[in-house]
Length: 172
Image 1 (cartoon, rainbow, N blue to C red):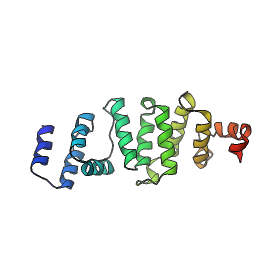
Image 2: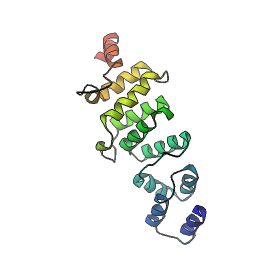
Image 3: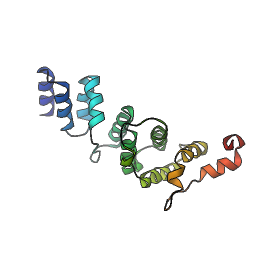
Image 4: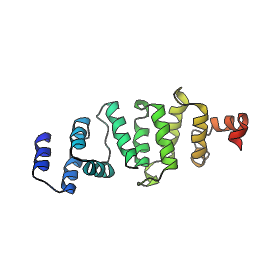
C-alpha cells in the first residue's frame, strides 16, 4: 500500500507539499525513508524539517539514521531530546557530536524542546564510555556549564575541573 501511494504521488506530479504530507503520515522506518530518499532532495529535506520523530518501534541503526537526518537539517535540540530517550542505543561518539552541534551551531528548533535532565543523561553516557576522550568531555562540559552547575543538577562537571587543573593551555 505504501509503495502504491508513493508511486501515485510521484507519477501524478503532486505538489511538493502534498508529497511531504504523504510521507509525514506514513510509518517512520527505513523502508519509508528509502522511498523518501528517491523522491528528491527538496522533499526529503522538507520532511526532516517538519517530522515529529517517533522512533520507538524501529531498530537502533534506523534511530541513528533519523537522528543524523535531523542534525543535517539543523534540528539539533529535537535530535538531543530523541537521543536522550534512546541513549543506550546510540554511540557515545555520536552523542558528543550532537551535543557539540547543539551548542555551537544555529538550530532551527526551540531550545525548550530539550530539558536539562536530557543533557545530564547524555553526559552520563559519555562518562561510562571509552569512545570519547576526557578532554573532549571537558570541552562539552564547558559548553553546557550553565546546565551542569544549575541547582538540582544530577551530573555536575567532572572532567572540566580535572582539565583545568592539569592543562594550563585549556585553563587559559
